[in-house]
Image 1 (cartoon, rainbow, N blue to C red):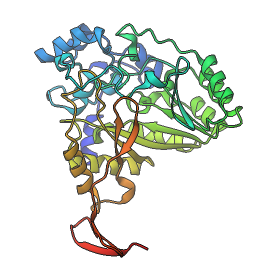
Image 2: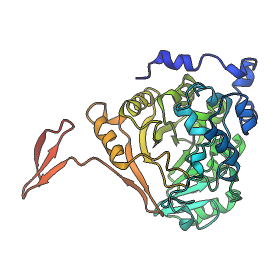
Image 3: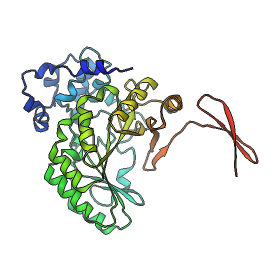
Image 4: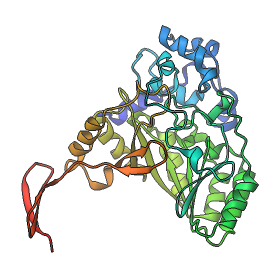
Length: 376
């Protein structure tokens, strides 16, 4: 599959950053300051295809280009189909808009009572606190907002969001997202989590972040102390491919787990990136070895310019079906579709029910063998 010695080869050396000191390389602020943000810088590091060049020139109108040096080092510069390359280097295909695609594919604007708050479910809210990410995923559901390339001009209003949560006692679960909230300063994160912990009806504080994958250097002892002080904190990271499971990510996850952080992973199923059973199984095994539970596998949202990433739902179901029984249940994420227009996450599963009779249900196991079970 993806043996450890292969991963070691991916992480051996810094190529274009060989002269950078360990102190700088391991400093998350250095990584952010030296991120690749334009076509000229990118072309100095990698030979681009014509589609990629055109995509980079168009990026400022859809979703900005930004790649941390750390994540760029995971890209195979000689492989135009490298899974990491496809995730972060723009393509001209982003300019192709299919009829079913939308700027707001999951209907966040419909359930947006105050700026930065999405209140779709009865007892939980999404709290958007920034528009900035460490690197920009080219299939981003929130690309209308993230990086402000489309002129959405989102500016977080933390106090109005906190006041809304305080005033709505039905809210027991807060998911902090953005952009990527782990790019906030330690002081701002401390303040934000402290305020949420002071609201008595908030039981469950979650963070959605791809920073551990794009920028594991951000997981510092001081940040971990903040989490430990206010934990348990539930963190959903976003790993799509086994090669992203580096020693640096493993170390970051271990630090977080030791700081009262519970980690789950949310992947997006992406064509030519992770849409094979062997890839997703290897990814799940590596996540579990890092103490991370494979949680959701999203069917790619209908964001504008994403048709080249989407995998057919029949193939998605078949992948999950082929994983079942051949790896542990903990390793199998829940396949979901975030319903277009704001219907929320809908779980999608293979059909294991053969038929019902008056008193029994007949079930297929992972091998296709049929067994019966009493209904009552």
